[in-house]
Image 1 (cartoon, rainbow, N blue to C red):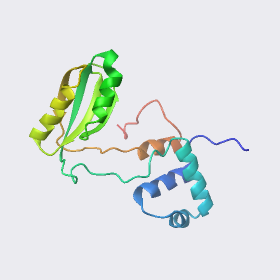
Image 2 (cartoon, one colour; image 1 turned 90 degrees about the horizontal axis):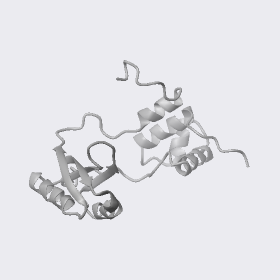
Image 3 (cartoon, rainbow, N blue to C red; image 1 turned 45 degrees about the vertical axis):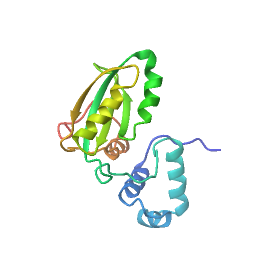
Image 4 (tube, rainbow, N blue to C red; image 1 turned 30 degrees about the horizontal axis):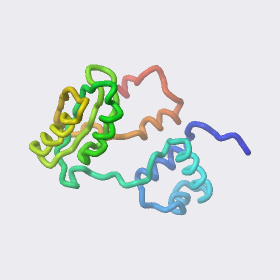
Length: 171
């Protein structure tokens, strides 16, 4: 069996862009647009999925379109021995969109969504009521300047890998 290739190449990047831009296109259509065989598309998607480059093929949902237009970031300070319990309790809150353990003045960074400010307050109160959560700090978002994205990182990977830092034009 040949060794697996690591990293991305230009065809992988073109494939990722097409899947992101046309998520409902079938493999044959993507293969036609790329000018490669359907088997090549399938093999590359399978490899990138197995390597963890592609994490899902599900639709991206809009919290606002689902009736939760107000978003906020909450940083929680937690008791360290309770971290696993707190993680499980946070998972039970549907308005919690994502959470990360972080360094700095807080311990857990959360992105949450609510129907309005009062609903957001109830979500924050539910988070603060979890045993082991000491306090929280919240900032409400006004608008997205750069929405979640990863393709520019893939672009850099394919075009020569990570440099010492962003160039002036990238900063």
